[in-house]
Every structure is written in C-alpha cells, then in structure tokens.
Length: 473
Ligand code: HEM
Image 1 (cartoon, helix red, strand yellow):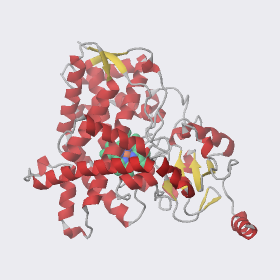
Image 2 (tube, protein in one colour; image 1 turned 90 degrees about the vertical axis):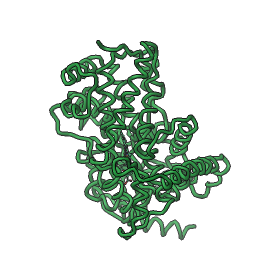
Image 3 (cartoon, helix red, strand yellow; image 1 turned 135 degrees about the horizontal axis):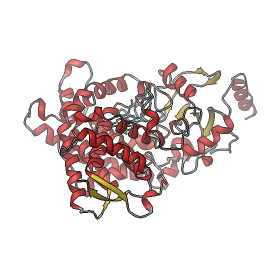
Image 4 (tube, helix red, strand yellow; image 1 turned 60 degrees about the horizontal axis):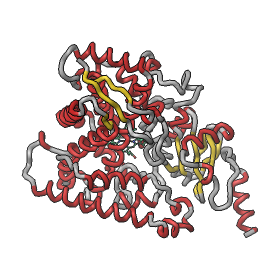
C-alpha cells in the first residue's frame, strides 16, 4: 500500500491539478451534490473557482462554470472532450449506447451523428414536417377552446403535443395510448436515476439490489418490443413516395443502401429512435412550459408579446410558420426562458480522451466533464440582473443559443452540440405565438407560481401549469 501510495503521489505531485473541495473516502464529493446538482456545483465554484476537480465515487469530474472554461473545453479542445463516459443505465436502454447522445467518440458516432444532422434533423427535413406541427398546434388550441374557460392543465397538453409531433415525424403516426406515454416517462425517470455502479464500480451490486438494473432492462425490453412492431409495420408498407416519408423510412433506406460503406443494423436504428424521443420530447416541452410560466409571472412581457403577435397576425385565424421571423420579441422571450431555465442544466457529461492542459491546469485522459451551463447563464459577470426575466436584453444583442456564444449554452456546443435545435425551436415558437394570439391566459391557484424544479435528467417545473384560457376577440 505504501509503495502504491508513493507511486501515486509521485505521478500526480508534479501535476498542476485544478482546485478541489475536500472529499470523503469512497464516495468523494457525491454527498455534496444534493437534489439539485447544478445549484450545489454553482455554490462550490464560488469557493473553488470556475474550473474545479471533484471526485464522484472513483471518477474524477472536472466542472466548468465560466465562459472561458466552457470555451476551452467545447471549442479550443473540443476534439479531446468529444467523448461520453460509459454509463450503466443508458447502456441498457440504448442498445449498448448505439444511439447518438451516449455513444463514445469514434467512427460509429461520426457516422450516426452525420445521418442525424444531414438527413433526419436538417433544416429542410424539419421544414417538410410543417403540416404535422400545424395539425398538432391546431388540435391543442381546439382542446383549450373546448375547456370553455375552465381550468386547463397546460403542462399535460404540451407534453402530448411534443410527443405527438415526434411520434408523427419519427414513426409516421401518433401513439397516444397511456402505455406508450408511461413507457416514455419511465425511460426518462431511469435516465435521471443515480446509478451507484457507474461511479463506484465495486458497489455495482447496489444497482442490482435496489432493482435499478432490473427496471432498466424491463423498460429496454418493452421499448424494443414496441420498436420491433414499428419497424415491421414500416417494412411491410408500400412506398408513399418522398412526401410521405418519416424518419424510420429514412433510416431503413440507409440500411438497404450499401453504397455508403457503413451498414446501419436494426439495433442501431432502434437506438437512434429511442434517442429522438428521449432527447427531443421532454426538453422541448420543458422549455415551453418555463417560457409560459415566466410570461404569466411577468404581465408586462406578456403584454409586449401579445402586442407583437397581434400586429403580425392582423386578424387572421392563425399565426403561420412564415410569420415567425417577423417576431423578434417572441424569439427573445424563448431565449430568455432558455437562459433562466436550461432543460439540461449540466448538459450531457463528456469525457476527455487525452491528457491536456486547460487554463494552466493539467487534466488527465479519462476525466469526466460537466459544464454548468445553468451557472454560466446566471453569472452576473455575463448578464445584467441575471435573476430577472427580461427578454428585452436579447433585442439589441447578437447572443444566440446555437453554440457560438458561451454565455448561453442550452443546446451545448461543438461536435457534441444538439442537432435538434431547429426541430425544437420551430415547435416552441409556433405554439407560443398561437397560444398568446388566441387566448388570454391566467394562472389558477398559487401552484402555478411555484418555480420549484424536479430532479432528473431534464429539470422541469415541479407543479403543473394550470391556467384558465379566455379566447381573445
Ligand atoms: C429545447 C429542446 C432541446 C434542448 C434544450 C436540448 C439540449 C441538448 C443538449 C444540452 C445536448 C448535449 C450537447 C453537448 O454535449 O454539448 C443535446 C444533445 C442531443 N440532442 Fe438535444 N436538445 C433539445 C431538443 C432536441 C431535439 C428536438 C432532438 C431531436 C429530435 C434532440 C436530439 C439530440 C441528440 C441526438 C443529441 C446528442 C448529440 C451528440 O451527442 O452528438 N435534441 N441536446
């Protein structure tokens, strides 16, 4: 042990490691994360600085909490930090991480990411599903109208809408049954669960004993059965031509096409589809839910937005997608909501694949990395009155969320950045514009004002958004 200890200290003593908080044996700093890790890490960064090295179980984790630190990781050294750590639960749910979001950096990830960027989620492809968004938005507006001024659970309606849009675009039709909704909920819940084995491998038995692994395997099996049905249905159906193609059709076409030098196996297709659901539905609905909540808490901003929408709508029955670019305030509202309420506050963990020097510190290969985008987006050195909801701040600023401005990173940045920005934001803009164009909304009860957050992979509002909606004349 002494020999090992002296070897260990000699191999790290000449290294200039980032500051670290004191840690406990075995668990390291795990106990300090609490139920809201982004808040706990923000508080720790105030003592240990914008680049700190914590220890979660046996895993060294670098936490970046400033614009400079994030830029070094996601721009200057993006390639070195482009991998994802191995994780027990995603590994079970995504067919041994054959998806895009959790797969490790390498040729496989490059191939599937480029399929997503160029063929599944390109601007042209997203535009081609405009009819789906129009339909689903109109259906939601009808449901609100039918409530006739009584209480509407807007959170539920928004979840259904985003699920339906992803289902129709990806699978070609809706799957509205309670079972599918429940399956998605259980999957998201499991992805947000803490797996002891991922951080302390010697305690992996805890995940087995607690039933976590069993639950993950059950969800994976149910999803697999569901997707097998979807794929069979697609293989049997006759070709509807380019117009009627959904994302499964496109993936199956890739599978048949051998000219690309890369064969897409059935498990890979299923993993990518699970990715589209888990990465695309909860995040989109959450950002919209927070935006509406902030507008209801800030009547002045709501009035400003309604004014803009009214001027562009000019009495027509709906706001169309072509109108959205004429609405700078609408876009500013959604940006500001994303700044204050980043759906994935610590983004998705990354892992370094080489030793590297970062802001003067030595970072070892195999270090896990968390970017505290939530803390950066509320840092007073980047933002005036950061805790205030002030959409106006974006009207005269070029800061955007597309991964080029490191003050605002809701979708991450660099190679691993989110490929679904356009897909998500056009839904959000269309729904929000029409909602405030057609209705005057009022919160029902005190619960709606409660800004408490859930814990999990995506952070949403703990209490559902209950409103009464009066049609505007
Ligand atoms: C408001 C909605 C959304 C937010 C806030 C969001 C956020 C994110 C974030 C933070 C990442 C990790 C980025 C990084 O590591 O730098 C990510 C990755 C990803 N997102 Fe999104 N996302 C949203 C919507 C979507 C949609 C609609 C889809 C697809 C339908 C999608 C698909 C993906 C995929 C496939 C990845 C993995 C990329 C990779 O690892 O290379 N996302 N997203």
